[in-house]
Image 1 (cartoon, one colour):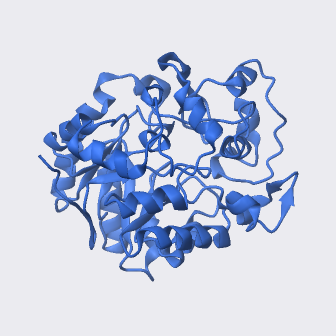
Image 2 (cartoon, rainbow, N blue to C red; image 1 turned 120 degrees about the vertical axis):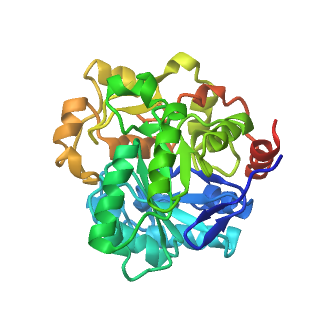
Length: 363
């Protein structure tokens, strides 16, 4: 049995699989371009584009790192990533993931529209003013990420009242996803917050606003998982971690090795300067942070607003921009390696084409 296509705004995604946005540099031109080429929705992460192509597009560096949000979220870097991805996927739909918690959120959304994103996906906070920045781009579909029916209701009410607009789809992310969670530590393990228990209430809320498509995310791993989400009423799924195990994934070979070598107990929840718990792999860095012996925190890139220019980084023991970019560059000593709960299940590297066949036709 094949899955039905997914409609997001005016765009048809042939295979209802959205590749999660992963930054710094894990889902850029090669991964996103190839996922879209193979009929899914490739998603380019807008985080840390100043690091793209050996920092060519970061015009000011301090200690070899992009200085401030203007260079960390480089518009030129994002443009170059989109141009390269387009060369791979042609005119097939392609998306940008822009975190709501970042500094320069509005500017980066506009940059992504200018770069040619067909769809903008935003999580890490409730993007209540997202449509404000895309008014000049009416064809760009808007997809917020939520963790509950209540959050979806808040967004729909606010968007409709302020902008006479509703989301074109919504990503519902459960607590098994990699990276930042929309839950507290305690909520992440509560039965009522598990993805399989969240889908129906969110689908019911989405139906009240005109059958907004719901895309289930967080812990989705194989065709059986996709089928289960569809049976619960989802119109598609979003998957991040599984795509790290592809040749085309933009992550460094060392990053892929970290996941290939990870055991189930190595994937943990940790504090983050963003203010939400984050899920990643236990590494040398997490050991240093636990002992309060992590590398110096200098806030060169000024990446996220909740960090308050490094104050929260000092409280949790690491700078998220520096440590994620170290992971992108393959530094296993100081890199921060995000992964969903299933990351330990990666055991080989295959092509995006092969993975899409497995996901839609079975192992």
